Figure 1: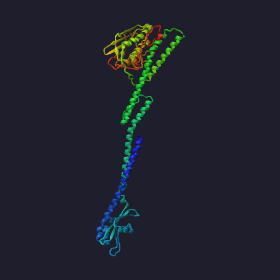
Figure 2: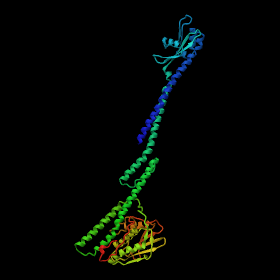
Figure 3: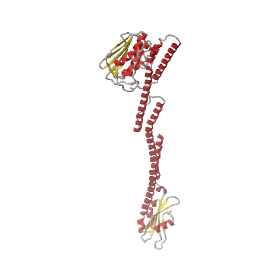
Figure 4: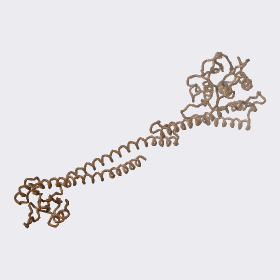
Length: 468
């Protein structure tokens, strides 16, 4: 594109220069010729008064020698025979008798080209006797073309400067047009190669700036969609860990035998596969933050917590865990979709069952602080050695077998309302997860919105059929 623009400007400028320079050069050449012959006519006219007075050869010779052209031996006077006398020629004539006779016959000035170079101006002048004398002025070729070569060189230089200037301007304009297009193409290649951080500077002409804005918006949408899809895959995979926890606990009561061992091996294999899916989704997650997939209508936190505790209390009974539930005796509305709050609770309670020994008590408390709702999940387990690392995305306090997504699900639910999550030491002696949900923040939403589910109470006899 750049070279095409340069070639177009080169061709157009060259045609313009030729169209103007050639006629102008011809005009200059014609003007130089006219100037030379006009000067010759003036010189020939200076001898006219003398010829009107006398045709004496001596007097005419003196008059011719006194003129500029006569002194330069470029003037000749041809006087016809007057009163029966012989014709008289003064000075060196170059045109020849035939040209002189033709000029005398025509009665007007003529020019004759000379074989040795140059031209001769033949100017007829009437004598007192009625005859016509002819004054011949030699005009050399150098005088006819005086200044023409210089004019052509100047025109050629000006034309070349115009061509070079137009090419330079076209090259700069082409670069200004091509660079944004090249950056756009390079960013498109990078995005196609999987480098999702590629963006285009919004510079250049208006059309290319619009294309850059559209490309950057498209790239942002691609990153956001990929982030949402990978978060959805990780979240859904993590939610499978709740029923896997049930299956793992139920298999403990199957006793010994080939069928029991095969069931336990299958559950362990399934849990490893789910962990692999979660890790893969998290490792491939782009750097861009995840936007909410949709706005939820909110829910009653007390009702959701009671429902999930109905499920987890059955497992707690099977493992001999003491459970305490407080603050759920009245309605507490929060701007979080029911599936998202349920997923966050399952993640926290699943961690309690997964990372604390059997028989460890735990508690769930709900506090309404007016402008916020605080959900506390505490246990009497060994605690988390590094709470800060546990809250960082991709870590879960260094607990064995953790995918690092449980607390992250809880954190995203809290932050979707403008709240946060904090880890500390509980009054029971173990870990306390404090979830702060703001009531005046933005409404929550997430990958699971619109698909609420209820758990069924399980007991020792139907542990294998318990579902979240």
